Length: 365
Ligand code: F0G
Image 1: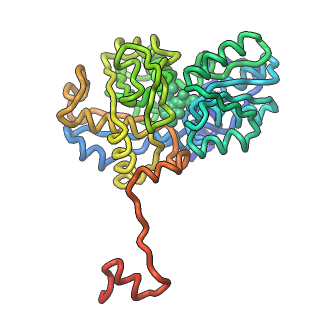
Image 2: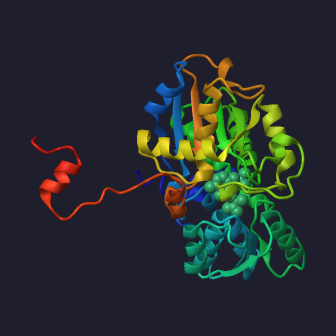
Image 3: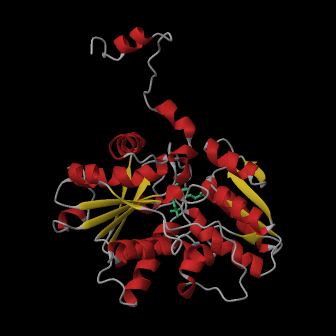
């Protein structure tokens, strides 16, 4: 990758971000992630569409959260903060812990006990965060963080911190630069709804500057058991295997609703079974391994292309040749325990060449 782009989102997009010469840039060279063409997925959905995956799992802590966190921690450092706090389903805490470590700040993370993927928990501990596991879900944790943050002793780095959204909008900039224009349709998983808000902001900003000729239709997918925006009501006990988006009362609900409405997009749900199937499909057919929440965008696209599409689904209205971008938000290695939900089984053999060839059906060849 040219050094021109691999320098972190604040340096790459300084002119579009609320930073000054007085802002200490805390960066791990996040962003500039690949926009990978997906020929198998394009064939699978048909219609002559061109599908791309924005592979955010290749950020320094393995998720898109690094884009917002470089901004949030840099601004906290500018303000002289010594400690930061966040609620998280795992990825925000990993990013907060890493960037706080780099800034020499203390990091406190509030997590729903027993509902954080193993890789993410390992990250929070390794980066030196103080981990508080609560007997409650993400929504409870975020409420507590708001209360604790009100005291002003620790800076909140959840996406209710506007600097997070500012940093995350840079993914939309990168997509426009990579494609030479905005895509026709953008699909992404929705949890706390900060990312769909950020993309829509980024797309609108570049469009207003004449850097793109169109605005994409934003389409979000929630897990069926955690779908407050889809149902239009708070879900008290959200459930899904995609723990990253196990959220019943998203903080950026109104902003997400505005993005969906203004862009003539849609919001729909995918089941855990569809998420798992899409996760495996993407890995096997495109060589891209993502965590379950990220696979919700792929599951959603496959659903749109089937007969079970949602009301207001934008896909049938797209012209052949239309470009579709799916954000795959986090790396598959974040959640290694997910393999238990797939029916994988290793073949077993003695360390014997002939036995192995026989087992593989390669004997006699
Ligand atoms: N995908 C992954 C992998 C996530 O970690 C999240 C959110 C989302 C999608 C949804 O993005 O919240 O902006 O709508 N994770 C947060 C966290 C809640 O704490 O790591 P969103």
